[in-house]
Image (cartoon, rainbow, N blue to C red; front, side, top):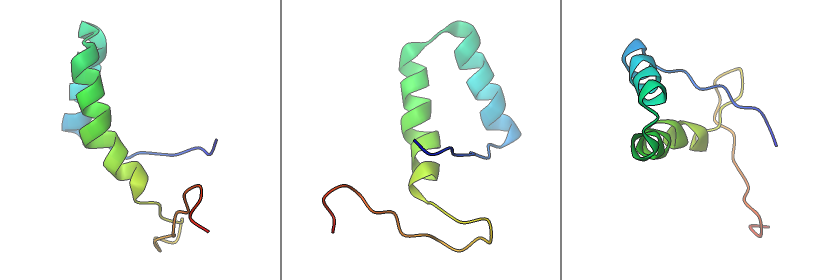
Length: 59
């Protein structure tokens, strides 16, 4: 599995800390679904160019 780095605004970091402190599974799932996952789908190289992501069975 490849590593990914996600950049979050200060507001999102505070929201994530609050979710962790409260151990709210529903809020955690929403955060991953609506905040983190969209950032992971946009794969970019270090130079900032967008890289095409191939999924299984796409060839």
